[in-house]
Amino acid sequence: MAFIVNYPEAIQFLYGLQMFGTHFGLERAEKLAALAGNQEKKLRFIHVAGTNGKGSTCAMLEGIYRAAGLRTGLFTSPHLVSFRERMQINRQLIPQKEIVRLVSEIQPLLKNFPADNHPTMFEVVTVMALKYFAENKCDLVIWETGLGGRLDATNIVTPLASIITNIAFDHTQWLGDTLAKIAAEKAGIIKSVVPVVTATENPEALAVIEKVAAEKNAALTRVRSGEWGVRSVKLPLLGEHQKINAVLALATVEVLQKQIAVSQKQIEAGLQNVDWPGRLQLIERGTQKILLDGAHNVAGAETLRAALQSDFAGTRPVILFGALADKNWPDICKIFAPLAAKVFTVPVASARTADASEIADVFRRANPVAEVVVCQNFSEAVIACKNEPFIVVTGSLYLVGEALEKLVGLPSDGGERGLNEWSAVR
Image (cartoon, rainbow, N blue to C red; front, top):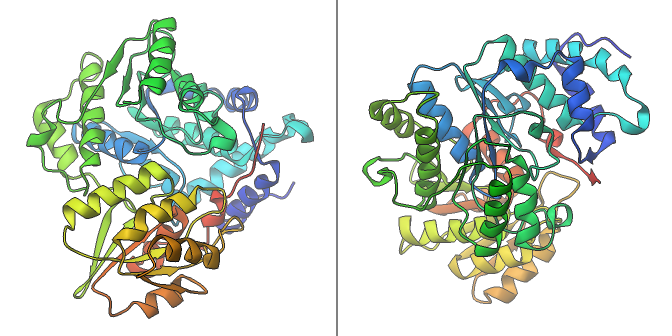
């Protein structure tokens, strides 16, 4: 086993772990965490699951508690450009040298696992994050699930509160083909007597969450948009849907007031300064406006459509679209097609990309009057629509990450989006 001496080698080591796929279950993560000294026992968590809105809700909670003077840890995935985005303290990306150190310290522990039951990359990264946050004495960690919840590596912690943002169809091949099945996986993060907050509205999914909460004697708080005084707070994030994410954050803060007191002034400061790239993020380049949103499932696409119709009413955007083949991109295309004056389809920089020509065919059938252009890559599409006043880049967070790197200059440590690749094996 080669000794890791620099950041590129650490990243390459993580790439090498992708060969182990994504095996769902907690056994390996629990064993690896124990070998690393059970750092999670030194930390307090808010655990966040759900189909959409997890990242924004996490960002809001982190902002509120940081405004309240806490040293905050933030663990999220996937990353948009740099792997370092996944672990942040007080919204500062983990330094490269810390990644090198953590990989070097975890690497020898992996000898304790047989080749046929080796920890996956996400499990290794989860334990790296626990070490990093504990060693830096974080007061509170905002802890986002990777996939699902029940069998996700993040589920080895016992949090102060659990959040389930909402339930919609996504990752159905792994989480189930009904909302009830998906809800059961997400509700797997509910712990005995640990309070739960949810904005889930679908009756079928909500019934599952209510049942699990009752079985665990976990107090359940349901929230709806407009509650907890969120309308009086100006959010910097676009879209009406961010209000329900803010409500979730506010309700969670209220539930935890006895453990962590936060003032109204601190709440407002945290929300007013929240930042979450790649989700309805508006970029202005001279007179051109570019809206970035990683809407990669039907519910996300409907949310983006609603935002375009409310916040950009009367405009006919040019849509720059690319998607992963394992997503329900045909239905997503049908949602966006009527809105577009022109569409550029591109492959996503991933082995799992959907074919840009096939995507274009769906757009043409859904909107025969729109001009639809197939491009070889993202850069070609950007050049082709350089004179368009309003562009929407969407369909995949991979594509949004590429846009942030090339259009905004978001720091890249060298083509690390490939670390988001995974293949699940139960």
